[in-house]
Amino acid sequence: MITVHHLNDSRSQRILWLMEELGLGYEIVTYARDATTRLAPPELKNIHPLGKSPVVTDDDLLMHESGAITDHFILKYGKGKLAPIVGSADYEKYAEWLHYAEGSAMLPLLLRLYTSRLGDAAAPLMPRIDSETENHFAFMNSEMEGREFFVGDSLTGADIMMSFPLEAARARGILVTYPALSAFVARVQSRPAYLTALEKGGHYSYGPATA
Image (cartoon, rainbow, N blue to C red; front, side):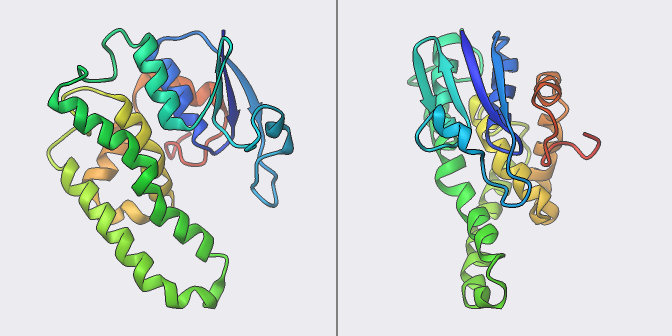
C-alpha cells in the first residue's frame, strides 16, 4: 500500500504527479498549512520527525525527500518509464538534474523568500541573490532552449523534480525573461497525469492559471 502525506502548496504535489505518471494506486492523507504562518501543521511530525512533506510510505518503507522518493518509485515500479537506461550518458545527465532541483535550483528562491521578510535590512544581500538567481535561471533556460524535456525525448523524473522550483519561480514573476523555462512549465502542466494529480491534491497556488 502506497500512502502520500500531502501538504498543500508544497513539493508533495509533484509526488502526486509522479504517482499518476506511473499509473500507481495510492492513498492521499492531506494536511493544510497554517493560514497565518504558512507552516506545516504539527500533525506531520507524527509521521516523520522533521514534520515536512512529502512523506511517503510504500508498505513498511517510510521515505522523505522528493528526490529519493522519485528515484525509489521509478526504479521499483517504472518498468522502463521516466528514466534513461542506467549506465547510459543520458542517465548521468538525468541524475544530475534530479539532484540539481533541490541542491541548486531552489537555493536562490529560498533566499529571496526569506529575505523578503526583512524589508530594508535585506538590501545589502540583494545584489548577490540577484546574481545567483540570474546565474542559475540563465543556465537552466539555455539548457532547455530547443528542447521539450531536461533529458532525452520524453518525460523523466528529472522533469518532475524540476517542476516545483520552476513553478515557484513563475509564481514570483522570475520566468518572464526565461521563455524556454516558461514553455516547459506550460507543457508539463497540460499533461493529463499532471491535471489528475492537481484534481486529487486540491488547490495548488503554483498550478496553471486556470486551476
